[in-house]
Length: 68
Image 1 (cartoon, rainbow, N blue to C red):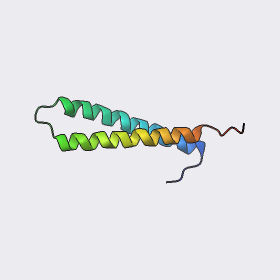
Image 2: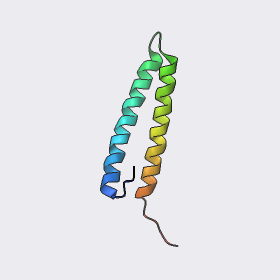
Image 3: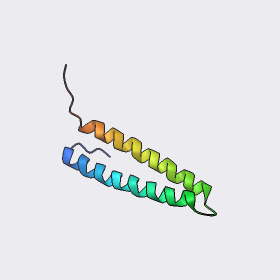
Image 4: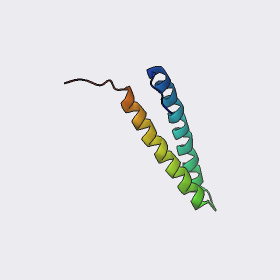
Protein backbone atom coordinates (compact mmCIF):
# COMPACT_ATOMS: atom_id res chain seq x y z
CA UNK A 1 0.00 0.00 0.00
CA UNK A 2 1.56 3.25 -1.15
CA UNK A 3 -0.11 6.29 0.39
CA UNK A 4 1.67 9.56 -0.29
CA UNK A 5 -0.93 12.20 0.48
CA UNK A 6 -0.44 13.56 4.04
CA UNK A 7 -4.20 13.68 4.54
CA UNK A 8 -4.57 10.03 3.61
CA UNK A 9 -1.62 9.13 5.84
CA UNK A 10 -3.18 10.95 8.77
CA UNK A 11 -6.50 9.16 8.20
CA UNK A 12 -4.78 5.78 7.96
CA UNK A 13 -2.79 6.54 11.12
CA UNK A 14 -5.98 7.36 13.00
CA UNK A 15 -7.55 4.06 11.92
CA UNK A 16 -4.45 2.08 12.92
CA UNK A 17 -4.29 3.80 16.31
CA UNK A 18 -7.92 2.88 16.98
CA UNK A 19 -7.26 -0.73 15.96
CA UNK A 20 -4.16 -0.80 18.19
CA UNK A 21 -6.10 0.59 21.16
CA UNK A 22 -8.95 -1.89 20.65
CA UNK A 23 -6.51 -4.76 20.37
CA UNK A 24 -4.76 -3.62 23.53
CA UNK A 25 -8.07 -3.69 25.39
CA UNK A 26 -8.90 -7.14 24.03
CA UNK A 27 -5.48 -8.46 25.04
CA UNK A 28 -5.92 -7.14 28.57
CA UNK A 29 -9.32 -8.83 28.84
CA UNK A 30 -8.05 -12.12 27.45
CA UNK A 31 -4.95 -12.09 29.66
CA UNK A 32 -7.10 -11.96 32.79
CA UNK A 33 -9.70 -14.48 31.60
CA UNK A 34 -9.94 -17.90 33.18
CA UNK A 35 -9.08 -20.64 30.70
CA UNK A 36 -7.51 -18.20 28.26
CA UNK A 37 -6.23 -19.30 24.88
CA UNK A 38 -2.46 -18.71 24.95
CA UNK A 39 -2.11 -19.15 21.19
CA UNK A 40 -4.75 -16.53 20.50
CA UNK A 41 -3.15 -14.20 23.04
CA UNK A 42 0.26 -14.59 21.36
CA UNK A 43 -1.23 -13.90 17.92
CA UNK A 44 -2.98 -10.80 19.20
CA UNK A 45 0.24 -9.52 20.76
CA UNK A 46 2.12 -10.06 17.49
CA UNK A 47 -0.61 -8.19 15.60
CA UNK A 48 -0.41 -5.33 18.12
CA UNK A 49 3.37 -5.13 17.66
CA UNK A 50 2.99 -5.11 13.88
CA UNK A 51 0.47 -2.26 14.18
CA UNK A 52 2.86 -0.32 16.43
CA UNK A 53 5.68 -0.70 13.90
CA UNK A 54 3.41 0.33 11.04
CA UNK A 55 2.22 3.39 12.96
CA UNK A 56 5.81 4.43 13.69
CA UNK A 57 6.78 4.01 10.02
CA UNK A 58 3.82 6.08 8.82
CA UNK A 59 4.48 8.79 11.41
CA UNK A 60 8.04 9.12 10.13
CA UNK A 61 6.66 9.65 6.61
CA UNK A 62 4.70 12.65 7.88
CA UNK A 63 7.88 14.36 9.10
CA UNK A 64 9.18 16.61 6.31
CA UNK A 65 12.68 15.94 5.00
CA UNK A 66 15.09 18.73 5.91
CA UNK A 67 18.13 19.39 3.78
CA UNK A 68 20.97 20.39 6.08
